[in-house]
Length: 299
Image: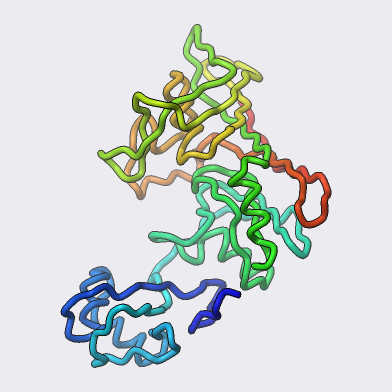
């Protein structure tokens, strides 16, 4: 059984953890200030006074506590200002094992960077009161549509294995730019690796394919088209890079083909990519499950 964390969930957010590496910092405070330059010493001292910086043994970290490695330290992340993403998620299904939610665009699945309360996981924890809720897979922040969550740790592994074993049928749709004479193959494969030029991007390289997408054209209207996409693999940004490589980039993509600044969200121009449906055999109940997003992309 997974050990209890030394700090409880607060406002839907569990504590963050940092491991103390071998080093010569005089105090744990000195390490934290150096490790997290965006958080000043006064903020760490205030957190310690509040009793919200704790080690793995539930012993409070005090301002003058000497540095000790290896040791895990837990604390709560905090953001001074976190504007609300002006779109709402919808819970489509809930039972003892699963929650299926329809995610709006711009909302990340899990906390990260400048997003904490404004993440699908934290919103759902607060809405449903399920502290152990955990995502079984991820979709990009810009992508709208279905995300599945595990409700309880004892059955989590059997659901996670569905995705690892590619036993979940995933369907997407996308609106893409459609130049005159464009076409797409029924299957596209390539090798995707991290782009050394920017951590946000991936790129195609020569070599054995590690990604595969099935494509079909549903409708063309002017210079845009609606595609049905079925990823066989689940590589980072796979659908976005495959569409770009085929000369039909997804409309309103802020990363491909051109990477826009991180603060350039335009809520009137969401990425035109939708995680439309998922289907699988439920390992807990034996039922055939199929869920579909109520959202629609229109040309």
